[in-house]
Length: 234
Image 1 (cartoon, helix red, strand yellow):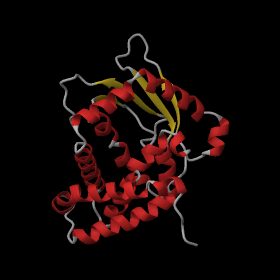
Image 2 (cartoon, helix red, strand yellow; image 1 turned 60 degrees about the vertical axis):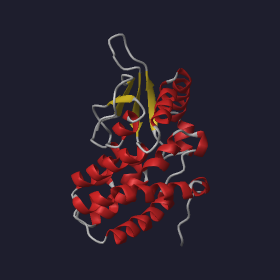
Image 3 (cartoon, helix red, strand yellow; image 1 turned 180 degrees about the vertical axis):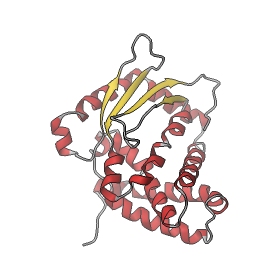
Image 4 (cartoon, helix red, strand yellow; image 1 turned 90 degrees about the vertical axis):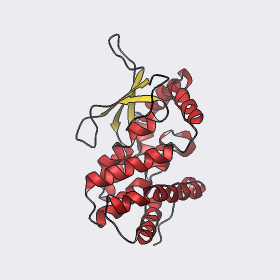
C-alpha cells in the first residue's frame, strides 16, 4: 500500500521540499569536509528520497490551529538528513554539528529586521496569551485523544526571583513520539540542539537545563530577550 501525505502537509509540501534543498546547498561543503562523504549529489538525492518517506510519517496535530504544526514542518526534515548520514557511518556528534550550523546559516538568510520582528511577536503579550490557551488545551484528555502524537505542555509564569520572562514545560514531545515510533531515538538529541539558534537568531535567549530526549520528566524552556545589541551566537 502506497503511503500518503496528510492533506495539510501536502499543501505545504513544495515549501518544505524547497527548504530541504536549500539546507543541502548550505551543508554541501560540510558534508564533504567534516562528514567525509563523497558523491554529494547521490547523498542529496538519498536525503530527498528519505524526506519523501518522512512526509508520509508526519503526524497531524491540528494543522493551522496548532502552533506545533509549524515546528514539525520546519524541523522534521532533519530526521531525514540524520537517517541518511547515520546510514553512511557519520558519527552522531558530527551529524549534530552539520545540522546545527546548516540550520543557523539558513535562518540567517532571513533579513535581520524580519527575524527580530518575529522575535518580538513571540515575546509579546498577545502571543503569551495564545501560548497559555494552547498549553491549557494540550493537557486535556479530549485533545490528547484526538491528537495522540502532539506535544503536551504547561505555560510557566516567572517567580519573583526568576530572570526569564516566561517559560514552557514540555511534558510530552511530538518529536520524541515520532522517534520512538520510527526508530530514530539515537538521532533525536540533534533535533533538540536546533532550538537554541532558532530563538537566538530572532533575538531571544533560550535557557534549558534538561530534555525529555535526555531522560528528564520534561523539557524546561525559559525565554528572555537578548540585549538589543546582542548577536546570535552558536
